[in-house]
Amino acid sequence: MRESAILDADGVSKSYTTKDSGPHPALSNVSLTVAKGEFLSIIGPSGCGKTTLLKICAGLLAPSTGSLSFKKRPGPPRPRSMGVVFQTPALLPWRTVRDNVLLPAIIQHADRKAAEVRAVELLEMLNLAGTADKYPFQLSGGMQQRVAIARSLLLDPEIIFMDEPFGALDAMTREKLNIEVQNVHARTGATIIFVTHNISEAVFLSDRIVAMSAGPGRISSIVTVDLPRPRTANSYVLPEFREQERIVRDVFDTAATS
Amino acid sequence: MSQTAVHASATGRDPTGPTEGAPRRSPRPRSLRAARHLVYPLLSLLVLAVTLGAFEIASRQRWISPLMVPAPSSVWEALTVGFERGIYWDHLLSTLSATAWGFLLATGLGIGLGGLLAALRPLERVLYPFIVAFQSTPKIALAPLVVIWLGFGVTSKILVVALVTFFPILVNTMQGLRLRDRERQELMVAVGATKWQTFRYVRLPGSVPFVFAGLHIGAIFALLGAVVAEFVGSSSGLGVLLNAERASFNVPGVFAVLLILMALGIALNAVMKALERRFTFWCREEDSPSTSI
Image 1: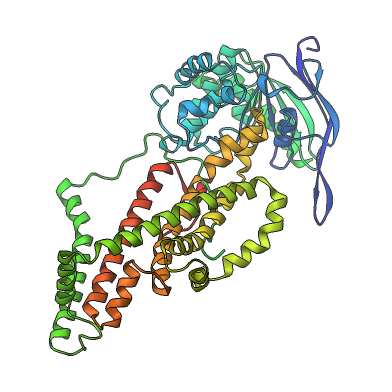
Image 2 (image 1 turned 180 degrees about the vertical axis):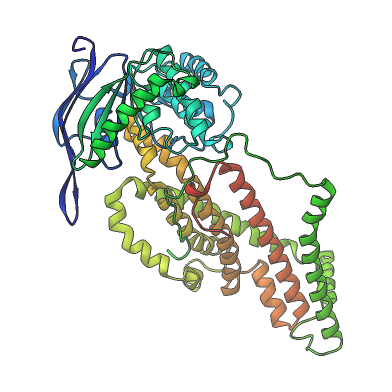
């Protein structure tokens, strides 16, 4: 594991300073090593700091203490080697789907021609063919979030951070998108860190699940998921899946009550 | 900031949007729907006809003095005769060109200064009290002063128009550029955007609905400014004509000019609405200023 580590968080803490009650610890002494190509989920009750941890790993928040290294280089990954999918699609409403997907290439001054070819591929891969010239408001929530995923994949990132990307979607759409995320993981070989509070989603997608507990946020345990891939819609009803789910739920419950 | 009441919140958005394969509204026969669309315009027309008819009768029967409210037919006559004699065209053109030039001047200055102040926060802080002070002054009240400075020509009219139009455009531009959508800011950090790129790709396009709201208010103020400038002192324009008709107690003539001004206002509003729709078609609730005209 150590050999293939891609991201390393060492003793990371974060406290927010509020006006009336002084510093409020959100994250306390979290250490985590993510292996290259791994699909790692972070679950936990709300307020346990899972989004904070993700944002620190992605370099969107600075840790109060502790350090981070990406591929043995100190600091979070450079924007060029990472993709981020947020809780909301965060598309720019005045740009077409194609231009939204191309945004990272424009910002990074990447080769435009190659990016356009890649954008078409990605839209097809995410079942968005034919929407390239549409605007975000013409798409459903599920489709918008798929566009956000396509955008995060444009420059073939080595690591992708997903912060409860499907939290606002209905269960059916969510299951469909989980299968697509698994496909993305299989096809790109990228490392994915995925925040969710949905246990079966975490079991379905992950190689490892990090369970966090609140007050202040810390890692309570890490569960390895040994289910064969590719997992399909039928996986949810398999006894092995149910068993894994139960294990994670136990961990989750202890985390929530401790 | 009474003219703007701009408030856009990033909360309250519905991230789900239309669901995939949501059922459509039950189909209704086409003819029935068309009829429903026609009902309200027809009722509006009916209200207009009844009102005009009532005034026509009241005026002819001398229930109200024609010196107060002339019969609609005599207003119509004054209007058509006026157009036949060609007394309106020069004045119309004069008002229209002052409105347009003043509006363009204010647009340039308002967007330019708004952009500058949004980019330079210290400068904004220094100038903010003055902006609020001017914003709170009824700019129309400056018209007599402008006439003293610049005389009865076109220049003073254009300046008055620009004065009343400038502030709503300025304030809205500043509001729009100041808008920070947390998710979009975070996205731009994640893709490695510089400050300038965030401005160029997020804040600038995001301000467009606000700028257009300002332009829309500005366009209406512009016509108002032109007419007031003409009242206060000018040699031509619909406001001048209105004053002249009033002085000679030609009440139908006054109403005729009012009708022309009304038509101008409606046309101006329609043009601004069309432009707004063209440039902010993507705009949903969370991206829009809550001003509506």
